[in-house]
Image 1 (spheres, rainbow, N blue to C red):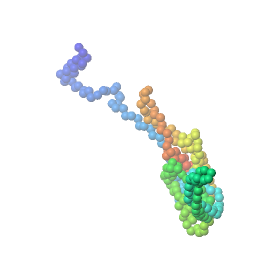
Image 2 (image 1 turned 90 degrees about the vertical axis):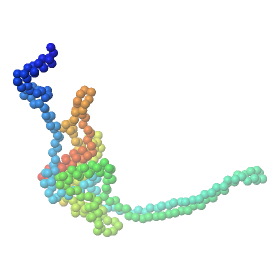
Image 3 (image 1 turned 30 degrees about the vertical axis):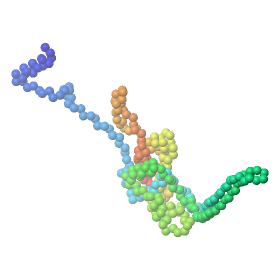
Image 4 (image 1 turned 180 degrees about the vertical axis):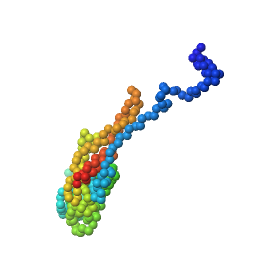
Amino acid sequence: MSRRTLLSCALACAATAGLAVPAVTGAQMRPGQPTVLTPAARPVQQVATPWTALRGRLGARNRVMLFWESTLDDAVSTRYRDVETLDRRVHGNAAQVDGVVDGSSGPVGVAVAGAQAHLHQRSESFVEGEGPAHAALSADARSMQSVFMSELRQGGVRFIDRTLATRLAGQSVQGERPNLHAIETGALVGHADFLMEVTSSADGNAASGRRFHVSLRSIATGETLLDFDTPADAGEPAVRPYVATANGFERGTAAPATQADTARVLANETGHRMADAMVRR
């Protein structure tokens, strides 16, 4: 007799005897074990941000003029030079006739050429000044700058536009040779509390391929509050998802850091250092 037949007979006997037969709804584990195992919560990488501390320590003096991939020119006056340009254009019409004429000594080749030229000349004189340098940013650099500023705004930083502040400071200046460097200094003094410079250089050892230098100076005193180098590497994520491979499930490869990730790390590090610097002042 098979096992299935024996089991059926046993159940029938138990039912005839009035015994309760438990319904089998699914596979059961060992006694004392839960029916369903709840998967452990996936750990999340926590990054401590300095924004609350920075906001409290900055207070009302939170205006920052940012020079991205640029530094403050150390010149105190603007150099000018007189420039004169000369534009000359020559327009000409030319004609040439070739033929053969019979002479006493035989056929002779004849060529007649004529030309007419017109000269147009225009001169221009103007004054050229060597004002403070402004870096022409690429699309990638502008994108990183935007992310960097967005992060630091969480710490209460108010960014002052360099171009607009300079225009406002120079709107009443007269003459064709204004001191552009003095105007920019007036824009800093009148509209900002701090000057921040962020520059970068190539670095093959950094994840982003760049190494960054950040400096922060007080406009009121000229004191350097921050001056540091950093690769702004995001590091390895705390958890990498499992992926199916020929050898079973294995930890997947971490995705490379994006420029936005680098900008966030740079802003976070800058915010921490700024908050510390404000305590020491």
